[in-house]
Amino acid sequence: MKIIKPSRRFTLVQKLIASYAALAFFSMAAIIFSTAGLYSLNRIVQDIVQNDFAFINSADKLRESLNAQEKYIAKYSILKSPVFAELFHHREVEFLSILKKMQQKPSGNDIMPISASYQNFLAGADLLFQGKIKDFNDYKIAPERVRASIESFYINHQTLLSANLMRAEQKQNWTIQWSLLISFTGFLLAVSVMARLIYTISSSIKKLKQATFFIAEGNFDHDPQLPPGDEIGDLARDFTSMAAKLKELEQLCLDASPLTRLPGNIAIERVLNKKLHETAPFAVCYADLDNFKAYNDRYGYIKGSEVIKMTGEIIYDAVTAHTSEDSFVGHVGGDDFVMVVPSEEAGMVCESVIERFSDKIRGHYGAEDLAKGFTEGKDRYGVKRIFPIMTISIAVLICQDGEYDSAVKIARAAVEIKEYAKEATGSNYLINRRRSER
Image (tube, rainbow, N blue to C red):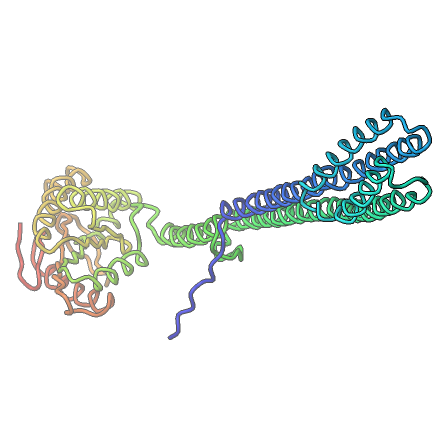
C-alpha cells in the first residue's frame, strides 16, 4: 500500500512573514535602485558642470581674450605705442592660462587645434611688434583661424552638453519609472498575499464555525474539509479528532447503565480487545448475584435496583482501592458485572468485593427474612421454594498472551467458569476452575 504524504504548506506565521518580506525586499530594491540611479545621475551632472559647462565658459573667455588682443595689435600697428604691446602680452598670459587649465581636464586634448592656431597668432604678433610686418591686414588671417578653432571647440562641446543633458534626463526618467515599478510590484505582491491570507482565515473560520454548529447538533461525522499544513488545518484536524472522541463518548454514554453509571457492553468489548493486543497478562472477573430474581420478586424492582446500584459501587470501590488506573469496571446488565484487572491482583479484588457485599447485603433484607436466613417464593418455573440470602459469585479468567483472540471467546470462557462458581453455596470466586470460598 502506497502511503501518500501530505503536501508541504506554509503556516500562517510563515505566510505573514512572506508578505512582509516581499514588501521589505521590493522596497529595499526600489531604494537601492533609486539610490544607484541618483548616484549615476549625479556623476553625469558633475561631468556636465566640471567639463561641458567649464569648457563652454572657457571658450567664451578665450574668444573675449582673443578679441581684446586683436584690438591691441590693431591699435599698435597704427600708433606704435608700447602700451598696447604690454596690454597684448597681459592678455596673452591670460589666454595661455585658460588653455593650460583646459588641458588639465580629462578631455583637454580637444584644445590642440586652438593651441596650434594661437601659436601661429603669437608668432605673427611678434613679427608685428618687431616691425617685420608693416600692414595689419596682412596679419588679420591669423586671429580668424584662432577664432574658428575656438568656435569649433565651442560648438563641439555644446553638442556634447546637449547629449549629456538628454542622457541625464533619460537616466532620471528611467530611475523614477523603475523605482515606482519595483515599489508598486512589492506593494501589489504583499497586498495579494495578505488578501489571500485574510480570505483563507475568514473562510476557514466560517467552516470551523459551521463545524462547531454541526458537532453541537450531534453530527460528529461532519468534516470541515480544510487542507492540513497550517495552524487552521491543525485546528480542523483537532476538531475532527474531538468530534470522533465525542462520538465515542456519546456511544459510551448511551451504552452506560443509567442505574450504576458504569460502562456497558460496547466499552467492555473495546477494553478486552485493547488488552488482547498487549503482551501483559490480565484477569477478567465476571460477577453475578445469586438469588437476585427471588429478592426482586419479594421486595420489588425499586429495592432490586438499590441492590444493583450498591453492588456496582462495591465493585468499583474495590477495583479502585486495590488496582492501578489501568483497571476497568463494566456493567453487562441486570445483576452481571465485569472487572478487568491485573492478573496478580484479581484474588485481592474478589475477596474485597465478597467481604463488603456479604456485610452490606443484609441491610437490604427485612428482620423476618434475616432471622429465617432465607425468603420464600417461586422459581422461574413457577414452583414454590425457599431462597437463601443473596450472595455474589465471581468467575475469574486469567488471560495469557496469545491464549485468546477475541472478546467473544473471553466472555464464553468466563460464563463457563461462572456456572461452576454458582454451583457452590455462599459468596465465592473461582479462578480458572480453582475455587476459593468464603
